[in-house]
Length: 234
Image (cartoon, rainbow, N blue to C red; front, side):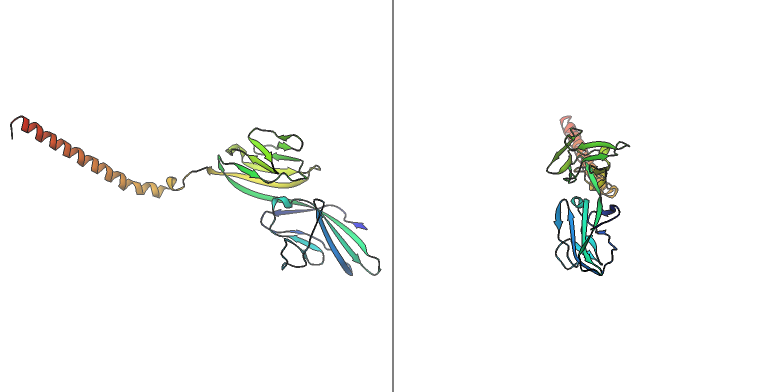
C-alpha cells in the first residue's frame, strides 16, 4: 500500500466542474474507489453516465456541477498491478474548497447551506477582520443569525453583513467561501427609480394642472355672473 505525499488542494466554483488530479502510471489500474464524508462515491467511466462524478484520463476524477456540500476531504484508492501479479493500492487525499458569490437584497432572509457535518466554525470578514459567527457545539454568536437543518441563516440582511463567509473544518482547512454583496432593498421597484420613467410622468402631471386651472376659471366666471345678477346688472 502506498500513500500520496500530501493532501492535494483543489478549488472549484459552484455550478462548475472540479478535477481531482491523478498522474499515476501503472501497467494496469483495475479499480478506482472514491470516498468522501465516509461514503463511497460511484465513479462513472465517461460523461455519458447519469452521475456527476466520472473518470478523466488514467485515474483522475471530475466532479460536475459543484455544490456547496461537495466541499471536504476526498480519498481516492487505486488498485493496480505492474510487473508483479499481486494487486497493490495507492491512496491519494484531496481537500476540495468550494467558492460562491451571492447578491442579496437588503432586508431579505438568506439561508446558507454551509453547516456541513465536518464544519467546525464559520468566520466572516464583514467587519474588516475575521470574526467567528458560528462554532460547533456553541451555535451562532448573534441573535440576527440562526442555524437549523444545516443552514446558517441571516434573518434580515443589512449592508454590514456583506463580505466573505468561510467555513473551516477542525484542522482549520477551508471548506467553503461565500462572498455576499448588497444589491438593494427588498421590494424596491426598479421602474420607479428609472429616470426615463420619471420624465414620462411630466406630461400627465401638466395635463392634470391644466384641468384644475380650467375648472377654477369656470368657477370664477360663474361666481362673477351670479354676483352681477344679484346686483341687478342683468
